[in-house]
Every structure is written in C-alpha cells, then in structure tokens.
Image (cartoon, protein in one colour):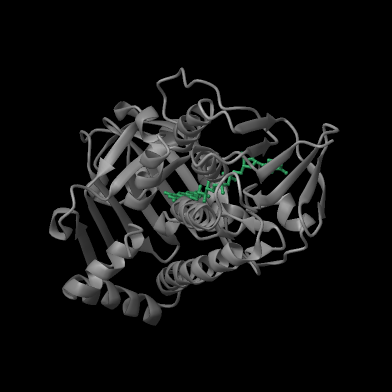
Length: 393
Ligand SMILES: Cc1cc2nc3c(=O)[nH]c(=O)nc-3n(C[C@H](O)[C@H](O)[C@H](O)COP(=O)(O)OP(=O)(O)OC[C@H]3O[C@@H](n4cnc5c(N)ncnc54)[C@H](O)[C@@H]3O)c2cc1C
C-alpha cells in the first residue's frame, strides 16, 4: 500500500520548503520531494552570489513558520531607502521607510541561508517527510487522490500535489500546463564586491539604455551588484579578471558606489519572463517560479512565490482540518488561482513597463524619466506602489 499524504510538494527550494513548513505546522502530512540534497550547514563566511530582497510580507511568513529565527543577524542586511533614477538625470525617485511609518523595507539575504533556515524548521515537524535526490516520473490523477511515481521506485499517494520545482517545473509539464514565455535578450551579471564605503542601508538602481545597474547592500562593507546588459557584452565582462572587472565597475557604475576594494565573485543569468497559463489543475497547484518567472529588476520573484505560499496555505487550512479534510478539493484551489494570477499579472506588467521604457528609444526613455519625476511628486501614488512592493497591499 502506498503511503498517503495530505500534500505532496515537489521542489524543496525556498518556496516549496516554506509551504511544507506552513502545512506541516498546521498538522497536515506532507511529502517534500527534492531532486537535490538537503541544504547543509553554511560554514564559510563568504557571501553567496544568489541573494534576494525579502519584503515585509515574506519576512512575516518566515517568522510565522519559525525560519526567521534561524537567519543570523550577521547574514542579513536591512534596507531603509530605495532610490531609482535614469542615467541622464532627468528623473529620480526615492522611497524612505520612515516616511511610510515603517522601520525598514525588508532585508537582503542569501538564498542558501533562507533555504537552510526553512529546512531547519522542517526537521522539527513530524508530519513532514523530506525525500531527497529523487524526482517525479509520472503523475496519475484520480477522483479521490493523486499518485506520484518517483524515479527511486517509490509511489506516493496524496490528496494534493504542488509543483514548487522552479522555472523548468516537471510537475507543470506532467500536468500538461503550458506557459507564455519571453526572452528579454538580456543577461544579468551578479557581482559580489567589497566597497570602500561602510555598511549601507540603501538599495539603488540606475536605468541605462543597456539595462539597469543596481546595488543591493549586504552586511558590513559588502554588496551585490547587478549589471544588466546585452548577452555578448555581459559574457565579455564576466570573463574579465577580478581587477579588470573592478576597474570596469568603477568606470561604468554611478559615482555614488564609491571605490571598490575587491570583486569576490560573479555569475550571469539569462533574463526571461514566463507565466503558467493555469495555476491549478485537478488536485494540483503551482507555486513560485513553477507558476511565474518575472524580470528580476524589481527584486520580487521570490516575494511573489512566498505570497503564493501564504495564500495557498491560508485557503487550504481555512477549508480543511488535518483529520477531516481533502486538501485537493477544487474550491480552495480555484480561489487560489483567482487571488494569485491577477497579482502576478500586475507585477509582470509593472516590470515590463520599466524594462520597455528604459531600454526603448530616446522618446520612451525620456517619458520614463518624466514618470520617475512625477512618481517622486505624487505622494499617495508613491505610497501605494511601495505598499504593493512590500506585499502589504
Ligand atoms: C538574477 C536574479 C536576481 C533575483 N533577485 C531577486 C530578489 O532580489 N528578490 C526576489 O524576491 N526574487 C529574486 N529573484 C527571483 C528568485 O530567485 C526566484 O523567484 C526564486 O528563487 C524562486 O524560488 P522557487 O523555490 O520557486 O524555485 P527554485 O529556487 O528554482 O527552487 C526549485 C527547487 O526544486 C528543485 N527541483 C527542480 N526540479 C525538480 C524535480 N523535477 N523534482 C524535484 N525537485 C526539483 C530544485 O532542486 C530546487 O530546490 C531573482 C532571480 C534572478 C535570476
């Protein structure tokens, strides 16, 4: 007889493990299937290249499942100011936490630190069984349960299966859900640096016709720079020596970055957008990058994924008790899709506007700069935009 779970979550990244923690805490039985390994302890002091801004809603979710306490203060960087401007200096906008009555806007944390913190929570939840180094081969959906056949020979039975297996989701494919995708023809070069300036609590972004240049602060005098550009130019920069790259950044980045002591790491990623045509199917839901991948210029991809987790967990736990519930029943899944798809579409549209306007022709760019200048003067609109980005709207 196959073991039965209330939910089978495929993908133990930040989003899948957050959902496993939320459902596990609610008393539900959960299988968490991960093709990689369980995250190990972080023993080195160096900062990893993959870093995310966690907004206040994301932070609340991590607090509620107990993961926030496992993120050491020395590995997160609080930011209180956000500045954005265009390269020609025609438009500029500033957001300050204090003006919104907030202590801060959130924190920058390495992805591996967030994931490790979540998995530490899972270890104390008896209802959650992590199953690592295996992936699904087949999905068989019946009227009362769904079967997931794994490539380690195990067959799992669940009331609900959740695809949290990232942009190339196999669960999405097995369920036959198509995506709308667009390649922006850009790459993002992520560069970890040590700055001559001390610890900063501002995140800034300058728009150039080639793409944005951004500074995300990390603890101490560390920072993660993101340099968007045309793929060939980005690959060429990526291939520079540490010293040549340091000099190129000092030459090309805004003067406010100040001098750099050293470049400590770099990697580049293609920039794509992708949106699943459906977030649900019978006894199935998609969350995180399996459902949507957005341009990272707004730093909202993970935040959206964690909002999916909050919405899905709230809807499921409100509708079913652990002992007497069918997590795969259609009502809450339908409501999940109704809630989340429009939110994601709004975020896609916003990032799309920024991308198109600032990499478009001179007329569009000057309209974009004027837009930033207008946003700066429209207090309530600015507050509305910011509350949305913080996940508070
Ligand atoms: C350059 C860049 C910068 C970004 N910056 C930010 C930011 O500042 N803020 C922000 O909010 N977002 C940011 N994002 C987006 C963010 O990184 C992603 O949205 C987030 O990592 C998605 O998490 P996920 O758990 O959904 O997917 P993933 O992180 O892709 O995790 C998927 C998990 O599933 C596992 N898996 C895959 N396939 C299978 C399978 N078949 N079976 C079992 N397991 C499987 C993988 O091993 C992995 O553990 C950025 C993205 C990029 C590219």
